[in-house]
Length: 302
Image (cartoon, rainbow, N blue to C red; front, side, top):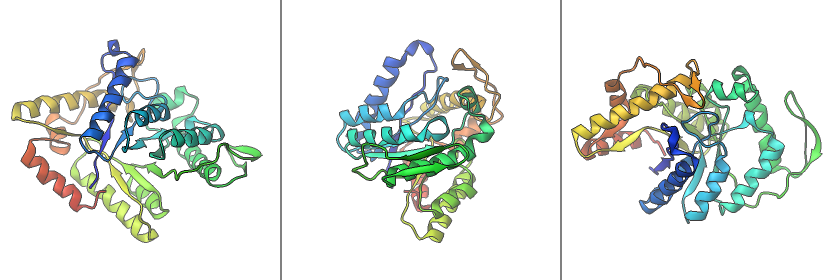
Protein backbone atom coordinates (compact mmCIF):
# COMPACT_ATOMS: atom_id res chain seq x y z
CA UNK A 1 0.00 0.00 0.00
CA UNK A 2 1.48 3.32 -1.11
CA UNK A 3 0.94 6.50 0.86
CA UNK A 4 0.16 9.88 -0.70
CA UNK A 5 0.05 13.00 1.44
CA UNK A 6 -2.94 15.22 0.66
CA UNK A 7 -1.67 18.78 0.92
CA UNK A 8 -3.58 20.66 3.59
CA UNK A 9 -4.24 24.08 2.10
CA UNK A 10 -6.54 25.68 4.64
CA UNK A 11 -6.54 29.33 5.57
CA UNK A 12 -8.80 29.20 8.59
CA UNK A 13 -7.14 32.43 9.74
CA UNK A 14 -7.35 34.94 6.84
CA UNK A 15 -4.28 36.71 8.20
CA UNK A 16 -2.18 33.76 7.00
CA UNK A 17 -2.06 35.04 3.42
CA UNK A 18 -1.34 33.21 0.19
CA UNK A 19 2.45 33.46 0.32
CA UNK A 20 2.68 31.50 3.57
CA UNK A 21 -0.14 29.15 2.55
CA UNK A 22 1.65 27.95 -0.57
CA UNK A 23 5.14 28.02 0.97
CA UNK A 24 3.75 25.65 3.60
CA UNK A 25 2.31 23.41 0.86
CA UNK A 26 5.67 23.13 -0.87
CA UNK A 27 7.36 22.45 2.47
CA UNK A 28 4.85 19.65 3.13
CA UNK A 29 5.71 18.07 -0.23
CA UNK A 30 9.46 18.25 0.42
CA UNK A 31 8.97 16.64 3.83
CA UNK A 32 6.70 13.94 2.36
CA UNK A 33 9.40 12.97 -0.13
CA UNK A 34 12.05 12.88 2.61
CA UNK A 35 9.80 10.58 4.69
CA UNK A 36 9.30 8.13 1.83
CA UNK A 37 5.77 8.96 0.72
CA UNK A 38 4.90 7.83 -2.81
CA UNK A 39 3.33 11.14 -3.74
CA UNK A 40 1.37 14.22 -2.80
CA UNK A 41 -2.14 15.25 -3.83
CA UNK A 42 -3.06 18.82 -4.71
CA UNK A 43 -6.66 20.01 -4.17
CA UNK A 44 -8.56 22.62 -6.16
CA UNK A 45 -11.10 25.07 -4.82
CA UNK A 46 -12.00 28.69 -5.45
CA UNK A 47 -13.50 31.62 -3.53
CA UNK A 48 -13.30 29.90 -0.13
CA UNK A 49 -10.64 29.51 2.55
CA UNK A 50 -10.35 25.70 2.71
CA UNK A 51 -8.63 23.44 0.17
CA UNK A 52 -7.62 26.72 -1.41
CA UNK A 53 -5.61 26.01 -4.57
CA UNK A 54 -7.15 27.90 -7.51
CA UNK A 55 -4.51 26.61 -9.98
CA UNK A 56 -3.37 23.10 -9.01
CA UNK A 57 -1.17 22.62 -12.08
CA UNK A 58 0.86 25.67 -11.07
CA UNK A 59 1.45 24.23 -7.61
CA UNK A 60 2.27 20.83 -9.12
CA UNK A 61 5.01 22.37 -11.24
CA UNK A 62 6.42 24.25 -8.24
CA UNK A 63 6.51 21.03 -6.19
CA UNK A 64 8.19 19.15 -9.03
CA UNK A 65 10.94 21.76 -9.10
CA UNK A 66 11.71 21.09 -5.42
CA UNK A 67 11.40 17.27 -5.43
CA UNK A 68 12.90 14.48 -7.49
CA UNK A 69 10.66 11.41 -7.37
CA UNK A 70 7.22 12.20 -5.87
CA UNK A 71 4.17 11.50 -7.96
CA UNK A 72 2.03 14.61 -8.02
CA UNK A 73 -1.72 13.99 -8.13
CA UNK A 74 -4.38 16.61 -8.65
CA UNK A 75 -7.29 15.88 -6.34
CA UNK A 76 -9.25 17.00 -8.21
CA UNK A 77 -9.28 19.48 -11.11
CA UNK A 78 -12.82 20.65 -11.84
CA UNK A 79 -13.39 20.18 -15.57
CA UNK A 80 -16.75 22.01 -15.83
CA UNK A 81 -14.99 25.27 -14.89
CA UNK A 82 -12.56 25.11 -17.81
CA UNK A 83 -12.38 25.10 -21.60
CA UNK A 84 -10.75 21.79 -22.53
CA UNK A 85 -9.07 23.26 -25.61
CA UNK A 86 -7.00 25.48 -23.33
CA UNK A 87 -6.77 23.05 -20.45
CA UNK A 88 -5.40 20.15 -22.52
CA UNK A 89 -2.41 22.26 -23.51
CA UNK A 90 -1.89 23.33 -19.89
CA UNK A 91 -1.90 19.69 -18.81
CA UNK A 92 0.70 18.73 -21.41
CA UNK A 93 2.86 21.68 -20.37
CA UNK A 94 2.55 20.76 -16.69
CA UNK A 95 3.46 17.12 -17.37
CA UNK A 96 6.58 18.24 -19.24
CA UNK A 97 7.59 20.58 -16.40
CA UNK A 98 6.85 17.85 -13.82
CA UNK A 99 9.23 15.46 -15.63
CA UNK A 100 6.38 13.04 -16.30
CA UNK A 101 5.35 12.70 -12.63
CA UNK A 102 1.87 14.24 -12.94
CA UNK A 103 -1.23 12.11 -12.39
CA UNK A 104 -4.31 14.06 -13.42
CA UNK A 105 -7.24 13.63 -11.08
CA UNK A 106 -10.39 15.22 -12.47
CA UNK A 107 -13.96 15.63 -11.28
CA UNK A 108 -17.17 17.61 -11.58
CA UNK A 109 -16.76 19.81 -8.50
CA UNK A 110 -18.18 19.41 -5.02
CA UNK A 111 -19.14 22.89 -3.82
CA UNK A 112 -22.21 24.47 -5.39
CA UNK A 113 -21.17 27.77 -3.83
CA UNK A 114 -18.13 28.05 -6.08
CA UNK A 115 -19.42 26.48 -9.31
CA UNK A 116 -22.53 28.64 -9.38
CA UNK A 117 -20.55 31.83 -8.75
CA UNK A 118 -18.28 30.81 -11.60
CA UNK A 119 -21.20 30.46 -13.99
CA UNK A 120 -21.90 26.71 -13.78
CA UNK A 121 -25.15 25.67 -12.05
CA UNK A 122 -24.37 22.80 -9.71
CA UNK A 123 -27.04 20.54 -11.21
CA UNK A 124 -25.27 20.86 -14.58
CA UNK A 125 -21.83 19.87 -13.35
CA UNK A 126 -22.22 16.14 -14.03
CA UNK A 127 -23.26 16.33 -17.73
CA UNK A 128 -20.74 19.12 -18.32
CA UNK A 129 -18.02 17.00 -16.73
CA UNK A 130 -18.88 13.93 -18.79
CA UNK A 131 -18.60 15.80 -22.09
CA UNK A 132 -15.51 17.72 -20.98
CA UNK A 133 -13.80 14.45 -20.06
CA UNK A 134 -14.49 13.03 -23.52
CA UNK A 135 -13.14 16.18 -25.16
CA UNK A 136 -10.03 16.21 -22.95
CA UNK A 137 -9.22 12.58 -23.68
CA UNK A 138 -9.67 13.13 -27.40
CA UNK A 139 -7.40 16.16 -27.39
CA UNK A 140 -4.70 14.32 -25.42
CA UNK A 141 -4.75 11.16 -27.52
CA UNK A 142 -5.67 12.23 -31.07
CA UNK A 143 -3.69 14.57 -33.24
CA UNK A 144 -6.64 16.33 -34.85
CA UNK A 145 -9.99 16.67 -33.11
CA UNK A 146 -13.31 18.25 -34.04
CA UNK A 147 -16.41 18.27 -31.85
CA UNK A 148 -20.14 18.79 -32.10
CA UNK A 149 -21.77 18.34 -28.72
CA UNK A 150 -23.99 20.18 -26.26
CA UNK A 151 -21.27 22.19 -24.53
CA UNK A 152 -18.45 22.02 -27.10
CA UNK A 153 -18.54 22.65 -30.82
CA UNK A 154 -15.39 23.36 -32.79
CA UNK A 155 -13.73 22.58 -36.13
CA UNK A 156 -10.63 20.37 -36.42
CA UNK A 157 -7.72 21.46 -34.24
CA UNK A 158 -4.59 20.05 -32.67
CA UNK A 159 -3.37 20.93 -29.22
CA UNK A 160 0.28 21.87 -29.06
CA UNK A 161 2.69 20.71 -27.87
CA UNK A 162 1.80 17.07 -28.19
CA UNK A 163 2.07 14.83 -25.11
CA UNK A 164 5.42 13.07 -24.77
CA UNK A 165 4.81 11.26 -21.47
CA UNK A 166 1.74 9.29 -20.43
CA UNK A 167 -0.76 11.39 -18.48
CA UNK A 168 -2.66 8.97 -16.20
CA UNK A 169 -6.27 10.02 -15.63
CA UNK A 170 -7.95 9.51 -12.26
CA UNK A 171 -11.65 10.21 -11.77
CA UNK A 172 -12.83 11.68 -8.48
CA UNK A 173 -16.03 9.80 -7.58
CA UNK A 174 -17.78 9.25 -4.24
CA UNK A 175 -20.92 7.19 -4.91
CA UNK A 176 -20.33 3.42 -5.22
CA UNK A 177 -22.29 3.13 -8.47
CA UNK A 178 -20.15 5.81 -10.08
CA UNK A 179 -16.96 4.26 -8.72
CA UNK A 180 -17.89 0.87 -10.16
CA UNK A 181 -18.68 2.36 -13.58
CA UNK A 182 -15.43 4.34 -13.72
CA UNK A 183 -13.34 1.34 -12.67
CA UNK A 184 -15.06 -0.87 -15.25
CA UNK A 185 -14.07 1.62 -17.96
CA UNK A 186 -10.44 1.37 -16.86
CA UNK A 187 -10.04 4.69 -15.06
CA UNK A 188 -7.97 5.07 -11.94
CA UNK A 189 -10.30 6.27 -9.17
CA UNK A 190 -9.94 8.74 -6.31
CA UNK A 191 -12.58 8.57 -3.62
CA UNK A 192 -13.15 9.35 0.05
CA UNK A 193 -15.69 8.55 2.74
CA UNK A 194 -14.83 11.92 4.33
CA UNK A 195 -15.79 11.61 8.01
CA UNK A 196 -18.27 8.76 7.51
CA UNK A 197 -18.09 5.35 9.18
CA UNK A 198 -15.98 2.43 7.96
CA UNK A 199 -18.98 0.81 6.28
CA UNK A 200 -19.16 3.56 3.67
CA UNK A 201 -15.45 3.16 2.97
CA UNK A 202 -15.94 -0.60 2.51
CA UNK A 203 -18.80 0.01 0.05
CA UNK A 204 -16.64 2.37 -2.01
CA UNK A 205 -13.71 -0.03 -2.11
CA UNK A 206 -15.92 -3.01 -2.99
CA UNK A 207 -17.47 -1.05 -5.85
CA UNK A 208 -14.03 -0.32 -7.26
CA UNK A 209 -12.99 -3.96 -7.15
CA UNK A 210 -16.24 -5.07 -8.81
CA UNK A 211 -15.74 -2.58 -11.61
CA UNK A 212 -12.08 -3.43 -12.13
CA UNK A 213 -12.82 -7.15 -12.24
CA UNK A 214 -15.68 -6.66 -14.70
CA UNK A 215 -13.50 -4.57 -16.99
CA UNK A 216 -10.39 -6.71 -16.63
CA UNK A 217 -8.16 -3.71 -15.96
CA UNK A 218 -5.15 -3.02 -13.73
CA UNK A 219 -6.31 0.43 -12.62
CA UNK A 220 -5.66 1.73 -9.12
CA UNK A 221 -7.72 3.11 -6.26
CA UNK A 222 -6.66 6.15 -4.27
CA UNK A 223 -8.71 6.50 -1.09
CA UNK A 224 -8.43 9.63 1.03
CA UNK A 225 -8.91 9.42 4.79
CA UNK A 226 -8.12 11.80 7.61
CA UNK A 227 -5.11 10.39 9.46
CA UNK A 228 -2.89 11.71 12.23
CA UNK A 229 -0.46 9.84 14.46
CA UNK A 230 -0.52 11.02 18.08
CA UNK A 231 1.64 10.32 21.11
CA UNK A 232 -0.94 10.44 23.86
CA UNK A 233 -4.65 10.28 24.57
CA UNK A 234 -4.68 14.00 25.39
CA UNK A 235 -3.18 14.79 21.99
CA UNK A 236 -5.70 12.49 20.31
CA UNK A 237 -8.63 14.38 21.86
CA UNK A 238 -7.10 17.70 20.87
CA UNK A 239 -6.58 16.66 17.24
CA UNK A 240 -10.06 15.13 16.96
CA UNK A 241 -11.52 18.45 18.09
CA UNK A 242 -9.41 20.21 15.48
CA UNK A 243 -10.65 17.88 12.75
CA UNK A 244 -14.22 18.40 13.92
CA UNK A 245 -13.74 22.17 13.73
CA UNK A 246 -12.60 21.82 10.12
CA UNK A 247 -15.75 19.87 9.23
CA UNK A 248 -17.89 22.68 10.65
CA UNK A 249 -16.66 24.72 7.67
CA UNK A 250 -16.51 21.87 5.14
CA UNK A 251 -20.11 20.77 5.70
CA UNK A 252 -21.32 24.33 5.10
CA UNK A 253 -20.15 24.25 1.46
CA UNK A 254 -20.37 20.50 0.82
CA UNK A 255 -24.10 19.99 0.52
CA UNK A 256 -24.82 22.74 3.03
CA UNK A 257 -26.23 26.25 2.66
CA UNK A 258 -22.95 27.77 1.42
CA UNK A 259 -22.75 30.71 3.81
CA UNK A 260 -19.47 32.50 3.11
CA UNK A 261 -18.41 35.85 4.52
CA UNK A 262 -15.87 37.59 2.27
CA UNK A 263 -14.21 34.32 1.34
CA UNK A 264 -14.33 32.81 4.85
CA UNK A 265 -16.71 29.87 5.25
CA UNK A 266 -18.91 30.34 8.28
CA UNK A 267 -18.54 27.38 10.68
CA UNK A 268 -21.95 25.81 11.30
CA UNK A 269 -23.13 23.27 13.89
CA UNK A 270 -22.80 19.59 12.94
CA UNK A 271 -25.03 16.62 13.69
CA UNK A 272 -22.00 14.30 13.89
CA UNK A 273 -20.23 14.65 17.23
CA UNK A 274 -16.48 14.96 17.62
CA UNK A 275 -16.45 11.51 19.25
CA UNK A 276 -18.22 9.93 16.26
CA UNK A 277 -15.85 11.61 13.82
CA UNK A 278 -12.86 10.51 15.88
CA UNK A 279 -14.01 6.89 15.72
CA UNK A 280 -14.21 7.02 11.91
CA UNK A 281 -11.03 8.80 10.87
CA UNK A 282 -7.57 7.59 11.87
CA UNK A 283 -6.37 9.78 14.74
CA UNK A 284 -4.71 7.40 17.15
CA UNK A 285 -1.47 6.13 18.68
CA UNK A 286 1.08 3.86 17.05
CA UNK A 287 -0.19 0.34 17.81
CA UNK A 288 -3.80 1.20 17.00
CA UNK A 289 -2.67 2.94 13.81
CA UNK A 290 -0.83 -0.19 12.64
CA UNK A 291 -3.88 -2.36 13.29
CA UNK A 292 -6.29 0.00 11.57
CA UNK A 293 -4.06 0.51 8.53
CA UNK A 294 -3.69 -3.27 8.24
CA UNK A 295 -7.46 -3.46 7.81
CA UNK A 296 -7.24 -0.91 4.99
CA UNK A 297 -4.50 -2.90 3.28
CA UNK A 298 -6.55 -6.09 3.63
CA UNK A 299 -9.36 -4.39 1.70
CA UNK A 300 -7.00 -4.04 -1.27
CA UNK A 301 -6.63 -0.26 -1.16
CA UNK A 302 -3.61 0.69 -3.26
